[in-house]
Length: 332
Image 1 (tube, rainbow, N blue to C red):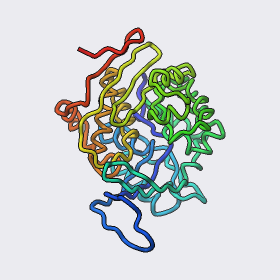
Image 2 (image 1 turned 120 degrees about the horizontal axis):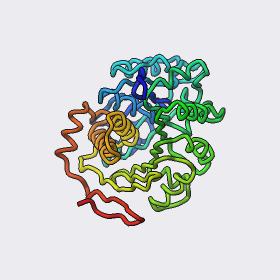
Image 3 (image 1 turned 90 degrees about the vertical axis):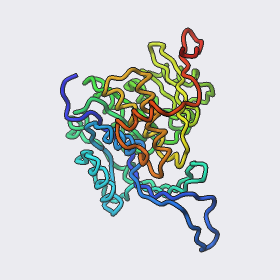
């Protein structure tokens, strides 16, 4: 691949998050409950992936939308603090910055209150396409929230052009419903790696078993499907027939906000560094696990070397299982 200005272009959902924990209930009336931890973070299917990759040393640019508000100022500032290029983070007139209040439960689950905003409004114009695709990997994160991009067909056009130019494409969605299937189906023929959660894949397909979910998505054009399974790890299946289940790392969970998005940043880093599919998935899982140990997306991720040490020293919740000829076999 020819030299590019960036290793990773992250296009899509960027959100301003305010998070606190532990929260067991919203206080009644006008009462106040006290919490132990409170923080701010940039999150989202594109936001968390971009920050993890930048922490790992990749050259990253952010492509999305924010409002003309304090949250948008802070999102741009925070991304820049990690060395991420924000020149293509658009200010969207008439839209606020996408923002969430995340009420993290004692078990790490995170019910959220979300204000849709500029992610619905940003648009990659013809004049920006060369800049967006001046990259080794194009990550689209947040189909389901990118109304202007998706409804106009621009997301598919961008991914098609990326494929034509030899740019690797990765795709993630936001809390899919069956109604989102047409949007996703339009993108899968241009997708090298599709990275939904197991729940999102089930919602899109109506199926239940991992292999059936993957086959459903592979048959619609994806080059590879990687299902993130939460505490059960990750499942990989590609068009060549390579199939494996990789168990999760054992960690004490503080907050699961952004775990799947951090997986995507770690996996993209593995692709840029030329890791094998198994090792790239493992790097994604380690990024997700470390994220779960802190409050706020990416908080537990430090740098690439620290994550490699984590991989080498942290037990897994099972054995790696590879599939061959329709049979899953434990790696020996």
